[in-house]
Length: 474
Image (cartoon, rainbow, N blue to C red; front, top):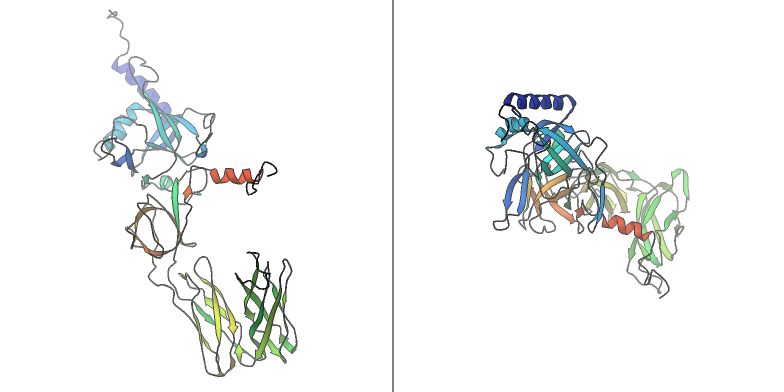
């Protein structure tokens, strides 16, 4: 039986130790954010969590116990690739957690064990701007000093993002996942992301042109040639009058045509047509045209130029527009005695805008400056998707969560995919009401964990696996 005259820890002594610990944490600690995990859905039998949310964050002071860095084993080579396993140990006050965070979380639905920090919850560490997942909570260290427990020791590991919904409303926390940080960096492993190329906001492009005399009207291809492994340059002779200007054009190639067996190489092509970038002016006679090969092979292409007065000059794009998926039809209207065949072709950038318009037939004897009309893009695309909102496919009904939206490149990155999206269906944001339709689907989703592709590329520098037997003679 213990001696009743010696008390091993009174309430006042325990309170003094707790107060000293709280004071030390506030003086020498770091303010972190504690994110409790909310279980959105789980399997009824195995109790496996299917989807979880983090929609709140609570600041609390913590002492960094791993002052020498992110533990001794920052990376791990596994069957899934190279994984960053940076670890950190934090110490927080038991009293502060129970008196501050527990009352705020106790009444929330789908939160389990709110009386103490639990494994699976997240910690935002501001010094490294990283999210860490609590892997183990040590709640008996120091071990019953004066018969009391005063701290929680949180052993955390760098968070590997999968299908969780993180939207706390705290800018510093949410920005880790909203594009303020590089999604490809080691700071946050984003898990599997599906990239969709979307249509931009539909804006009709505009362009203007002028008229020139003695300008290049067209270049007709008399012989496509064959065996070109690089695009030949087009040389145009300079037989224009004093004060004139030289025309310029470039070749557009076509593959899959076998001419005298010169195109049996799948990389060899023929000349499809010539696009005029500048018709020049002041030509007094028809210039000669040559197809010049410099960095490749190929021969046989023959072109014939035609000049005219009152033909189209350079077409200048005054508004590049947006939301184009395919090259739009360019219509040229004006009064001409010989307008037959006048035509031009537009070039669409990866962002869906018109970057240039080239002449294929400039027409003859326009009496006044013609009007350039560019076909409208699809005009049903609008708005910007917002982080973490649910989007839905209009045809497939497939849903996903927005993890990144780039309105410049029109790339949408999604997680939590419930099915398969289909080409050219509209993707509608349930919160933003943004609408864009799919122009391309990435068949190789991003994986924020595995680095198998990087390993394979490095291995290719050592062994050529394209050979039948990369280790020796067949």
